[in-house]
Structure formats: C-alpha cells, structure tokens
Length: 554
Ligand SMILES: [Zn+2]
Image 1 (cartoon, rainbow, N blue to C red):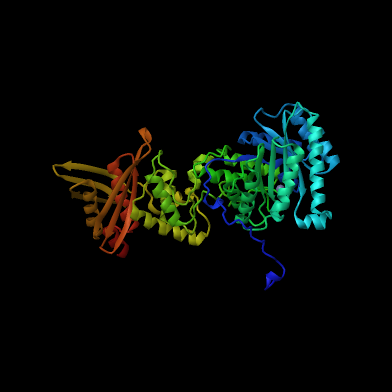
Image 2: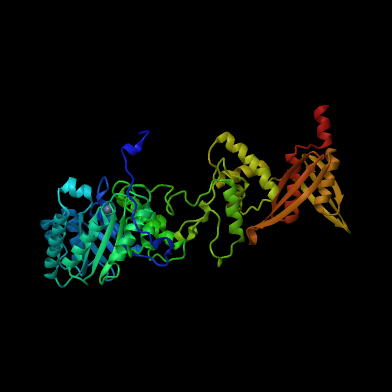
C-alpha cells in the first residue's frame, strides 16, 4: 500500500445540493422491487444457472412475492432465450407479475430481444448504455452528442418494434449505465433523450445504477434527489436505483436513495452479483420490516430461501449475513445471553419487540429461539441456565447458576470447545447426580409439630428429628458425621405434567461454616426430592459417617 494514497486515488467530488431534503425523510412504505437474480446475479456466477436451476429460482422469486423479475439477457445466449420462451409459451407468468429483459443499445441485439418477447402479456425492455466519461472517452471513444444519438436511435428502434406488437403491454426501462460516475447533466440529458424517443407520458423506468460504487452513500442520495427533482413528477416516469456493493454500502445507498425519492429498487437475494455483488434485497426489505413497514416480500421461511439460493447460485451465504446467516440469532457472550434471557422472560406476546441484541424476532423468519444461545468459553451463567431451562425444564436458583457455571467453565477450559445443551445437561448430572438413590429405606414420620426421618446412608442407619423432613434429615447428618450442616436456601419446581411429572429440589448448604454448596434431588414425590437433594449435597461435600471415618483411620 502507498504511504500517500492521494497520489494515486482521488475522492469523488461531492454534489452541490445545498437544500437537500433527503436527510429528513422517513421511509414509510416499501418500494417496487425488481429481482435481477436471473440476470445480473446469474451472469456473475462461476457456473451460470442451467434451465432447471433457473426455473427453481424463478418459482421461488414468485413465492417470495416479486412482481417484477428480470429473467435474463435473451439476445446473449440460447439458454437465456429458451428460458424466456418457456415462460411465455407455457404461460408461467402470473397476471400480477411483469418480466423484464435486458439488452445493450445495439441494433441487432434490440431486434432479437423484442422478438424473444413475442406473445408476452406484459414486458419491461431494459436498454442501457454507459454514460460516464471514462467509458465515453476510453471505452467507446464517443462524444456526449454521439452518446445521445445512440440513445435516441436505440429507443426509437425499441418503440418501432414494440408498436408492432400491440398485444403486449410494454414498459421501457432506460439505464444510463455508470450513472454514479457520470456528470449529472449528461445522465439527465440521456434520460430526456430516452423519454422523448419513447414518447412522453408512456411508461418508462429511469434506472440509475451505481454500476461501480465509488462514493459514500450520501453522495448517491444527492445524485438521486437531483434526478428526482428533474424527472419524478413527469407522467409515466418511475425512478429506480440499481446499487452495487463495491464499498460495502449497497444497502445504505439503496435506503438513502429511497429517502431521496426513488420508487423502485433492483437487486438480488443475499446480494449475489458482479464483484462484491448487487444490492441485497433481503437486507433492505427486512430493514424496512424492523421499522414496522411491510416490505411486500415474504421471508417467513428464510432458511428455505437461503437453501434454495445457495443451490441455484452454488454459492454459500455467509454465517454472518444480516437476518439469514447461521449465526445471526446466536449470542455467545454471557452478558448478552443474560440480557436476552431476562427480556424473553418479561415479554408478553402482544408487546412491541424490544429484545436486546435481537433487532428482529427470529420466529418471524422461521428461525427458532433454541439457536439464540450457545455456550462457549465466553458464555456466562445466563446461557447455561437458559439452555438447561429451555431444553430440560431445569430452573436453577441464581446461586446454583453461579456455582455450576464455574464447573462448566473448567470443563470448557479443558476441552476448549463449544458445549451443546446436551453436553451441559450431562455435565450437570455428573456434578449433582440429581436422580441418585443416596438414601435407602427412607421413612418419614410426623408426630405433632415434629418430623422424624430414618434412612440408611452410606451403609449406616441415620436418624434425626426436626420441624420438617429436611430439618430432621439435616440433624441426622450432623449426628452421623460430626459435622455442622445448615440449609441456607431451598427451591423446588415441577418438571413435566401428569404421570411423568417429577419434582426438582435444590438445597444450598453451609458446611462447618466454611463451605457453601448445592445439592440437587429429583423424585416423583416432592418431599423425597428435597431429602435426596440434601443427601446429594452432603455427598458432594464428601462428609462420611463418623463410624466409617473411624473404621478408615483405625
Ligand atoms: Zn448491475
């Protein structure tokens, strides 16, 4: 890289538009969408779609709800021509859908293009030619006047040929290609020339591309506002934009252009297209959705759309892709997980969406909450307890969450890999043995205000009396071990219902006023669950009956 890049690269000159209005605009409705997956997207593939993949893409675009679809470049290849004919001949174009085809401003290609559309109910003929100085001067060697002659001649030819096919409802789309790099006056002159040649008042789409994105998106917005002032209120005119993504700001360019007055947006699903891609239509549509604007495109099963696009394009969608990536509803950081868990717990179905770290409800796109939280070395207790609760119905008390998260952390430090819900549950069972039968011949007996508990524990008879069964068993353990055991806290809840219902009990123990630890018990009977929790906690503290201790040291 150069230490002085200004010697090689020049910034794009800003547009003088002192009274620009677009910065205050708010988007309140969806634009008209045009999918160019089958044209601009397809031509950028290592291996362009074959007929069957084209058809699958087309059918999916219809299902999503696109009403304007650019289906190809029929004068360019036989495959494109045949596909277009199939759509027309087999009447595969729904009544509310218009197909679009592209042709460069060249006589023989225009003729072949119009011919390929014969019998279509409606069609948009998309004619383009480059207008920016580098193309005029270096690529084609044409003056501005010569470029305008080319536009005039080409559009007059389109008009002549389409007038001869009155059974089709025709719309012209004219793209001053390389618009974002061109002088605005030259682009405007080209558009005026196209309008005049096509016939004023007849339906025309002026499509303004960032053929190569070359400035910050506010510059593009200025360019679009400038063009809208000139053309937007003319009868029959629709202002369309066609952003690319060379600077990674295709989405921003489209959104600011809509604020600046554009009515229509061209792009591809997940931003496929030349180089860095076309505008990502999914991104703009779902950005609108999260602002409360219905996009008019259905992504309620976004994984299915993504899978189909990946199949048709033979290109993967990034796991970080907005709204659609594998990891975008997954939160690894403990503090994020904690916040999400709390917000879900507080949320009622009718509430406005306000979940931290999740700009959209994954459910709206057919994604699930289960994927929201996974546990890795960056996760805290929030993620761990979320998984245990969601997948296994365990509601760990807060201090047990902290205790267990340290056990998980140690396991993770050893293994160094992400743990699944199943891994975490197995680890919980290994650490706490909630279902362990640590007491045999357990009996409780209530007499007045007192409860007596008797059991065999570690091969030895233990018994105690207290104001409840847990207290009685605690006394029994104190007696049997010679240790001081105190119950600090107790929680219980049910898992499941009916005949399968079980009770979970959690006791927090203080042992010899030195250590605090948890015991967990599970049983069909809540009293037994509590007593097992206590026994398992004492077992975790590795307290042995005194007689065993004496035997061991004898
Ligand atoms: Zn393009």
